[in-house]
Length: 540
Ligand code: G4P
Image 1 (tube, rainbow, N blue to C red):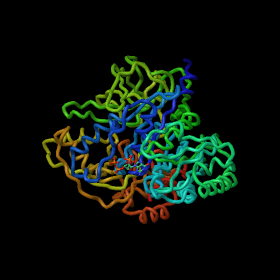
Image 2 (image 1 turned 120 degrees about the vertical axis):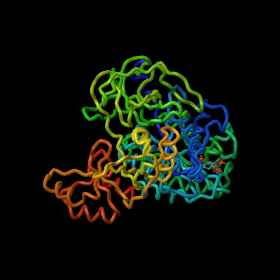
Image 3 (image 1 turned 90 degrees about the horizontal axis):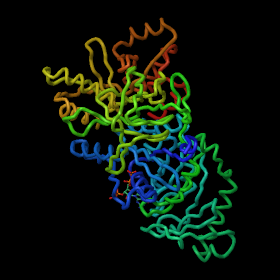
Image 4 (image 1 turned 30 degrees about the horizontal axis):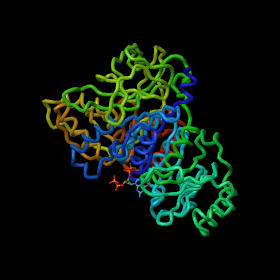
C-alpha cells in the first residue's frame, strides 16, 4: 500500500466529555463494533473516583488502566482507527489537553440531561485553539433530557461552534422511539439493551407517506415532519469542509449504553473524519506524506514497578515510517536513540510493533531521555510546536522533609515534572521550588510517588497565587521596571522562562493595566493574542 493510501485509511481521534457523560461507554461500544473487544466491560473505567484523593491504590490502579487504554487501535471497514484515551477526572485536565495535540479530530459526548458542562467548555476551548474537527454525540436519549433544539442552541452558544444535526430524535426519555437519519432518510427504532438488528431500521422514502405513522404513531410522526421541515429550513446542508476546518460540528443523537446510534456515528466518522494532518515545527510544516520519519512525545508514563525507573513515552507519528531498531535523532538532546521494543497497547494487551505510520502512536521505553513535547526524526533538526503548558491554578511550595534525600527529591521532582504530572517553577532568592497544578490530586500523586519511587519525603506549603502567566516585552526598560517592582511575584519555569504569579485574577488584570508594555500569555507557547484571550476566558 502506498503512503497516500495508508494515510487515507487512518483515523486518529479522541473522545472527550465532562465526566459521566458516557465517554467510557461510547469508547467501549466503538471497540465492540470495531471487533477490537468481544464483550462489554473489557475496557475498565478510566475514572479516578472522588474518594481517590486519599486512596493511593486507586491512583496506582488508575495509572495501570490508563497505560493499557492509552491508545486503542482497531480496523473498521478497511480503516485503521486509533482512539487516544483522555482521562476523565478534571484534575488530570492537562493530560487531556496534551493528548488532544496528538489527535486529528474528536468526538464530543454531551449528556442530554445535563447539556454543556464545565469540562465540556474547557475541552472544546482547546479544540478550538487548533481548529480540531468535532463531531458531537448527544448521549442518554433514553433519559428525560432537554429539548433537542435547546441542546443545539446551548452547544452553539456556549461552545462557540456551529452545529448541523445529522440525525433527529423522536421523543425523549420514556417517549424515546428512535432517531431519523436526515441524510439516509431512514428511521432507526429504539429497543433498549441490544445491538441493532436489521428490522430496527426502516427506510422512509417520503416523510408524508403513512409508513411513518405505522411505525411511530400519528402524533410523533406529525411532530417529526414538523421538526424535519424546520431543521431543513434553519440549517444549511452539512458542509464537510467547514467541519474539517473546525467551524461546524455534525451532531448525532443516541444512547451509548443501549448501543443506539453508535454504528451510525462510527460509519459517518470514518467517512468524514480527517486523515493524519500536517503538524508545525518551529522550523517548518511537516506533511504526513513526507518520506522521512518524524514524531513527537505527547505523554509519558512512569513504570508501574517502582523498582524500575524506566518510563513509557508515547510518540505520535507525524510523517514517514517508524521502524523498530532503527536509530532516530532526539533533536532536543541532539542524540541518537534506538528502540528495540516499541509497543502498542490494547485493552490490557501489549504487543511489539515493527513499523508504524502517521497517525499511529507507539509506546517507547525510556530511561529518562524524554520530556513532553520532544521530537524524533531521521536526522533533521526540527522541533514540533503546539504542546504548550497551560497556566496552572493551584500553587504550593515544595518542602524537603528529609535533608539526607535532597538529591533524590531533586531528581524525582525533575522527572515527575518532565512527565507532565505538574509544573515546576523556581523562585529567587532561595531557590524556592513552586509546584503548579490544575487539581489538588496531583499534589497527593507527587508526594506518594516521590516517596515510593525516589525515597524522598516532602510536604507542601500552600501559596496564595491563583494564576501563572508567562510574560514578554520588547521594551527592556519596562521589563526591568516590572522585574524590580514585582520580584516577589516572579519565578522561572523549567526552561528558564519568566513567569508572573498573580495573587488573583483581579490583581492580574490590574497588573496588565498598569504595565501596558508587558504581554502576558496564558500558555507557555505564545501564540496569537487572540488565542491567549480565549484561553484566559476558558480558565476563568
Ligand atoms: P464517562 O466515561 O464520561 O465518565 O462516563 P461513563 O461511560 O462511565 O458513563 C457514566 C454513567 O452513565 C455510567 O453509569 C453509564 O452506565 C451511564 N451511561 C452511559 N451511556 C448511557 C446511556 O446512553 N443511557 C443511560 N441511561 N446511561 C448511560 P454509572 O452508574 O455511573 O456506572 P456503571 O455502574 O453503569 O458503570
